[in-house]
Image (cartoon, helix red, strand yellow):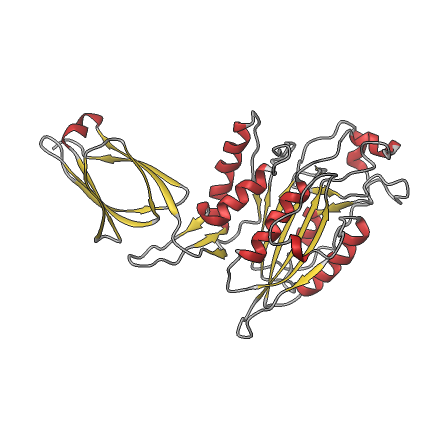
Length: 382
């Protein structure tokens, strides 16, 4: 399903998005399971379509860029009882299942829209995934293992292949791709020789900036919270809403953007943290991170969790901390509580520690950047 949005007439660039979420896999499990489907040893998911809907809703209601959202192609295959909500829900005009035929149709239109110098591409996919090569990333679609499949992987999308297929000089100069699925070795080695997944031909040249974030490392799993959301989508939205922000290097500026490098810096620890909370381990791998490209402009200044100590620890009794936002505006004055722990607006601060002999004062500028800062301030010995 393709949705179109009004773009200001003075906009010089436009964002085209493709979002796919697959929870329903009738031929892998249940009463419609086929002999081919049983080979995968996978069952239906419960949160992928809802996780994709969250990303689509963020694009509609929160995404801010020099390239406003112009089109959103969305394909969702929810499981029974899975709820689709958010800003995308009232825009859906009936079912938009993520089948091979639907993917071919939407990818063809998406590719055409991206064949322009003024285009920005945004792709997010979530569901069951498999991996056949070191950098491989294949998403299984709703009709994978269908009894009418011409080839074993006819109902699959080679996301890594499509990423490479759009990484050309004739396509969007700026592209952001997100693969939220497993990349484990499958139980049946024969699967790794199967063909049929939908892909694109690889063009000559390269786009100026095209980055894909793989939500699981090589031969590892991606996890979700049952009846909740995928761990990667939760971490991604956390990063897009501020944890992945890159801020000013000059005093007085309040222009904050989520950038490709800062996004990875925020995604990796967030995914690991969320996975550990549920007794699992999950990692993020970036592909094609060639430049630090702006993704999304924040509406305001993000907040930073700060923890500051003095070194040596014995100097705590004689040390007082002051924080001056933009070097002049007092935010903390003469605090004697160590360690200092607080949540403050991100930005550039004058960090000042006044102390007594035999220690020496500390007075320097520090960038307080999301998602947090844990720093030891040397007061040394005179």
